[in-house]
Length: 247
Image (cartoon, rainbow, N blue to C red):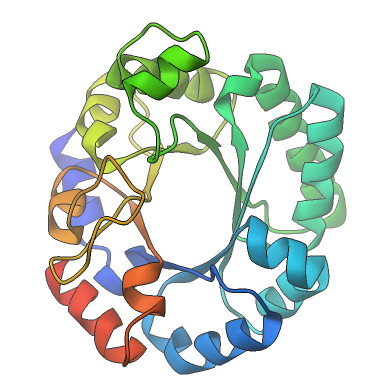
């Protein structure tokens, strides 16, 4: 990473780097959280649980209120299916969404091309498309179970290279692999979104490859996804401020 790119990342306000995961059961719960802390965070992540419960209409509703939405549905299917689904995601007005890098180069390339073409035609802002590398709940034993013999770090870097080659704007990776990606990917605007963030006041839960907010930012992460440490806090706004303070 160049000194210029380091300076550029440091100049971003901590608030803009924080993505809060709306991992709740209902749209009502999610709306309450958005109303409570929306002014203090950079974006909200809508994942599989809330998307299945509340649907695309809630995604559109949140985006139309002016909040940045990271739709975390991790598409992984044949190239045509993922490309078409991704166009529909762009139609919702999201800021960012993801696909699985393990879906391969053709899937990622066709997705990037289809979304770019659609957004240009409709005069819409193109969402950031990022590729999931290795889930933060996975370790080398998990990889071996599915036939991957590489070490976790090697597999993450391999998939990050693939994502950069085939038109992705960045990747999702654990903060432990962020320095490896920064060394291997020459694109200075390549985004790294890091789940597995556990503030000093929180527990690891089911995450295996974790870091504190301060460590993650120092390692080169662009965006930090935080869920339970904020959602389960008695005072969510105070929890947000603690996370920002650690960053």
